[in-house]
Length: 335
Image 1 (cartoon, rainbow, N blue to C red):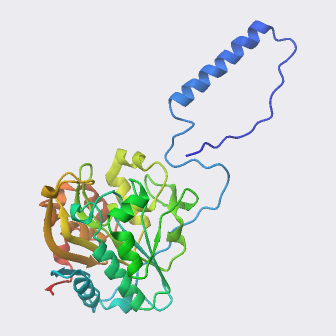
Image 2 (image 1 turned 90 degrees about the horizontal axis):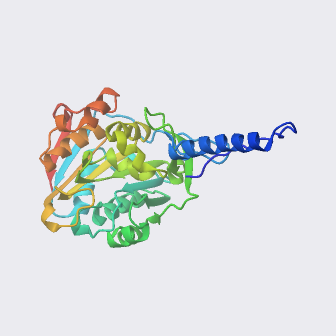
Image 3 (image 1 turned 90 degrees about the vertical axis):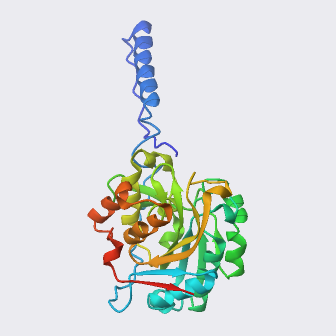
C-alpha cells in the first residue's frame, strides 16, 4: 500500500552554520529516518495508508426483515445440488423473500485457491450456478460472482470451475483490480478504514456462499471467515488477532442470506488443502439468516465444538447471532 507523504516547505540553512554542524544535523535526520522505516511506521499501520483525502464509504445492511413464519436455519441433504438449494430457499420463505425483480445481486463464494472442485478448497461450482439461476429466475437484473483470491485470480476461478458455472447460469464474474476497491469504514475493533471490493457498494443484495473447511489458524473457514474475501490491502496483518478480525468483518457485512456448501468438506490441512484424502462427502447444504448459528452448526462436519472456536463467543457477545443453534427454529429435510 502506498505511503502518504506530506510536503513541507524546505527550511533554509542559516549562514552561521558551519559545514561540520550541517553534516552532523543531516546525520541525525538520516538516523531518525532509518529507525522509522525499520519500525515500519511509514509503511504499516492498523489500516491501509492513502495517498490523498478520499471519500469514505460505509456498507449498507443487506438483510431482509425477520419473519416468525419461517425457520432461521435450513439443513438440506441430498445428491442434487440445485434441488437442495431450491429446497433451502423454499424452506426459508421462497426466493422471492430475498430477491425482488430488478435487484442487483452479488454472490460471494470462497474462490481463494488454485484448486479443483474435488479438492474442496473453494465453494463448489454447482452451488454458485444454482443460486445464480434462482436469482435470475426471481427477476434479478444482474448477478455478479466475485472474490479476492489469494492465488492468481484467473486460475482460481477457472480451475475451481466457478467461472464457467457462473457464466452458464447467467452471472457475471468480477475479478477486482487494484482500482476496484473503495475505502470503507468497517467500524470494528481492529478494522477501521479498509479497502473493500467496490461491488459491495453497488448492489442491492448480497448472498454469502462459503464452504465448510478446516483452517490451520482460526480452526475453520465458514460463513463469517468468508468475508476476508471482500477486502484488499495487507490482509495478513489481520491474522495477528484473527478471531477479532473475523468478528469485525461479520459485523460490517450483513448479508441477505448465507448458503453454505457442505457437500464436500475439507477436514484437514486447510485452507488450501490439496489431498483428496482430506476430503469427505457430506452431501449437505446449510442455509440461514444467522451466521453465528450457521458456523456453530457447521462445526459438526469438522468434528469441532464451539468452545474450541473463540470467534463464535466473540460474535455472540457483539450481538451478531446465537451460538446455540439448537435453540433456533430450524428445518432438516432430504431431497
